[in-house]
Structures are given as C-alpha cells and as structure tokens.
Image (tube, rainbow, N blue to C red; front, side, top):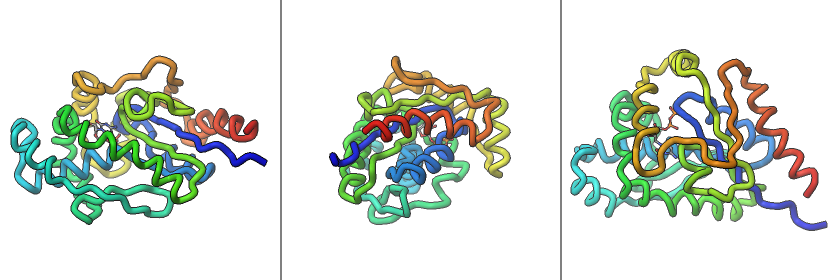
Length: 223
Ligand code: CDP
C-alpha cells in the first residue's frame, strides 16, 4: 500500500477569527504538526521590544534581525519558536506586544527573515513523522504555501471577534491590528484567489471544524 500523502493545510484570517482553536483540533484529528505563525511574529516582537528596538527604527530592526537566532521546540503537536534558545510564553500576549506586533509585521525585511523558517517547518513535520502540517496566520495560503493542499480563510464579524477575545480575558486591539494587517503593502491579510472562505460569525466551533475537516478527511480516505 502506498504511504499516505503528506498534506499541508493553510488557515488564514483576522484576529480572533477562530484559526488557532480549529487548527489545534485538526492537528489532533489528522496527526498534523500545528504551527501558529502569529506566535512567531509575537515572539520576535517581544524580543525586539526587550532589546529596545522600535518598529519605526528600520536600521535598528535590521541590525537586530541579523543576530536573531531562531530554533524550534516541539510541544506535543505544536511547533514553538525559540529565540536565542528560549521559548517566550506569557510575554507574547502582553499589551505591548499586542500594540506593536502589526507594526513590526509590516516590515518586509522582518517577513523575509521568517519566510524560510516557516517553510522549513514542513521538513520538521516530516522528520517527526507527522502526516502533514496545519499552519495558521495571515499569509500562509498566499505567500508561505501558495500550493498548499487546503487553503482556508476564516472571517467573522468584528463585534463577534472582539467578544471572543474579551472572553479569553485579553485586552487586545484587534480592530487596529486588522486595519494595519489588511492595509500593509507586503503580504496583506486577504483571502487569496482559490482559497475557501468561511464566515464563522454564526457557527459553533464544532461546525467550523467540521467544515474544515470534511474535505481533508475525504482526501485522505481517497489516498
Ligand atoms: O491570535 P490573533 O489572531 O489575534 O493574532 P496572531 O495570529 O497571534 O497574530 C498577531 C499578529 O502577527 C497579527 O496581527 C499580524 O500583524 C502578525 N502576523 C502576520 O503578519 N503574518 C502571519 N502569518 C501571522 C501573524
């Protein structure tokens, strides 16, 4: 019997659109490595802020990026980014990071610095015998893996997303981040042509997961 195919699932969408929770469930259901690229942008932001680098200071950002040492640690089915050998935990959800991350993420040099790292996680998944990879972010189906087997784009009403984020006990500037993420020149947040768009405003988590899992299960059953 041929080995089952390695599959790449890309999930993009705005802040609190339901990406992380559904990606985590899909990773369990199909034995996929789960990659939350937002946590990478947050970790780099936390590191740069700690070094006193402001997003508006491009020369300082470039100097800091040149000495950035990135690694990967597996935590169950999730890939965590190490910066200088350390996984940054709570601080990546801090108010300072929430307020600055979209400014750093708009810098083309910073996105380029993370591009090969993100693509390389497919090899990490293969090396660790996962059946594939589910990667979530803003530009996964458009830039990182434009040929992914499945590309989903999650949307939800802004008021509903603000409610979800508040119910997680977090103070977050999601409307402002969405505005910055959608309007930047490099890799803006947008549903790429050919991706499957899903409005989750009136769907339960189970319903969202079923919509995403259906086509994946069908493909794997046919393989
Ligand atoms: O969890 P939430 O959806 O609020 O945000 P996140 O996924 O943790 O991403 C935080 C920020 O990182 C976003 O607002 C973007 O500015 C940036 N980001 C990005 O530019 N590209 C990605 N692939 C992922 C995140």
